[in-house]
Every structure is written in structure tokens, then in C-alpha cells.
Length: 449
Image 1 (cartoon, rainbow, N blue to C red):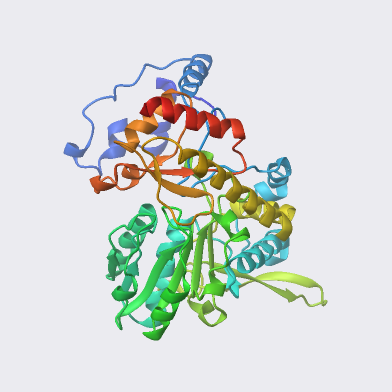
Image 2: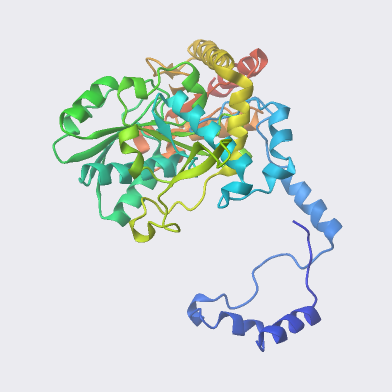
């Protein structure tokens, strides 16, 4: 964004053009007691060079993911992205396309969305997938609303090991819809929760994440069996998409709806977004699926072509009967996902997943030798939970000062549960070297000594 300040004369000209006498006239709709009495305490205007120098100085105070050994996860992961991904998505025909309202001039966009849907359906083990959602958390919330429509029930059971951000989104959307949510007390890695006992005849769906927020691999089969026995649906959540290359697909384990965060494939951390939500389900549920679905057909001349097959959105013909108020999809992000997946292929994804798991196992074995540190997981993919002496947030700050970004304290995402303050989530991907692992272990030993 260019830095283009306005002069006082320019402001007056603009106000005169719209018929306003002063800047205050633009805010008459805001109650006086809600307005700031004066200017905010910000530096006076400066030239563009000065602003660039100041902002570059502030930026230099950050520690970027690639600057130091990096073991942060908890729903957003650092993976290698081939240079060809960014090169291809920045081609003008991709970068500037918005939404395929006119299929005859949007065949390229519709085609890659069709390929994206195919990839997601194969990864999740489901029969149909939509053209993406905003992110994993909103996809989870939409899945719960979809389950309520399908079962005509209004009670969702959330596993205690669901990502706290996902849980909050589900609770917010359900509250606005007038539905009930039973969120189980967080069960940390290595312990168990009796989620089967919470499923009854009033349950519309059960939401379970695997790998869980704590990194634990969850066997979905008994949960699916109990849910189906009472007419409820199982919603499986995945926040680390690379795990699809190694962990058995949720569809094969009995899930009815699968939602996931696709950031790990093709999309960098990007300071927290934008990301891309994956959404897949069974064919029989397709008409209640939110978002939109691209389909393959032939045109009047018999040539292969693509169209929006289902778009049950409020801005289309469904209006107030729309399945969702999701108005668009994360187009450029799902294109990056699609390109990266095409480059990896099935063999490449499996190899990448095995590499992630091997690195995490190696790191967990090394951390077990640190005095006072306990690995809590019975199983994990590329992320696991540590119990550390004292406060995990304090430890992370000390390690950051030592030049290592060690992970995410659980207390940061669960501040209302102080009994979890000694838990630390640690993730290790293909981006971590042996030197990174040794530096983390050495720094932790020094800080805890």
C-alpha cells in the first residue's frame, strides 16, 4: 500500500464534493459519548522514507519462523513450499480472478476448483468436497450447523481435545442459531475422555479432532459406531493436512463430515492468514453442504467443461433458505493447495508425512532426556504435548530470548484453565534440522537447570 497523505486543502475539497462542512459531519451517526475527544496519540506525519525506515525498524524486532529454530504449531504449521507454487499463483489469470459467476469465461478457475475438490475428497476418504471454506475453524462451525439440519436435532457434543479456537467458533455460531453445544472438559494428551457416554438420542453430531489439539491420534471408529447407533453424525476435524499422508483417512474410520485446515499444503504461515478450509462429506448429504460445488459436464459442442453445480448460498436462488452465509471461497489459497498437491502426488505426500513423523519422534526422544520434562502422548503425528517444570509460558519466553521458538503454551489458548499451565505443545516438521533439535534441547536444559 502506498503512503499518500492528504493536505488540508485536499481534505476540504473532498468534504465540499460530498456536501459536508467538516470531518465531524461524517460521524454524526455515532453517539457523541462513543467518539474519541481528540486525536489518538500517534506520531505526527512524516515523509514516506521516514515511515519506511520506522516500520522496517519495528519489523526487525520480530523473530520470523525461518530466523531461528522453530517448533510452533497448534493449528498453523511451517512447511516447505516449492518456489513453483508462488510462481504459478501469481500469474495474472490466477491472481486477479475473483469468482466464477460466468462459467463460459471462468473455465480455468472452475477447472482448478474441480481438481481441488477431487484432491480433498481423496485425502479425506469422502465422496464429495466443496470448493473450500475460509479456514478450519469456520468449516467446523458450518459442519455442526449442517448436522443440525440433517438430523433435525440441536445438540452437538464437542471433544475436549478439539482446538480451543475451533470450539469457540462452533459455540458462537451455535449460540446465534439457538442450538446447544456440550463442550467436554479438555482431556490432555495421554488421558482419556468418556465421550461415548455423552452421546444420546438428542445428539445431532459429535465433533472429534485427530490428531487432536494435543497431538494425540484418536481412534474414530468406536465414536462413529456409537453416534450412528443413535442417529447422530460424526464430524472429524484435522488441523494438520500433511497428516493425511500417513494417518488413516477419517472417511475410512466412519466419519460423516470431514473438515480440515489446509494451510500446511501450499500456504505459508502468513502471519495467521488467510488460510483455506477443507470440507467433505457423503454423497447423500451433498444438498446440505455449505459453500459451493464445481461440477464437470460437456458444452453444446460436446467439449469437456465446468460449471457451478450446487451453490446453495443466500446470494443465489436459495435466498433465506441458503445452507450458509459463506459468500465466497479462499480461491487463491486453494489454488496454492492444489498446485502443491499436484507436485507432491500420492507418493510425495506419503514421503513428506513420514518425514514429519520421523522428525517429531526423534525430537520427542531427545526431550525425554531433559530433566523434569515429560512427553504425555501415547501416539502422535508431528506434534506432541510436554509437561514441563513450572509455567510453560515463562519457559517459552526464556527460550525465545535464547534464540529458539520452542512451541505454544497450552495456557495461551486455554487461559481459563490454570491447571494446564505446565503443558507445552511442540511441533516438528521437515523444516527442522538436527541442529535445530539439538539447539532446542540444549537451551531447555540450560533454562531448566
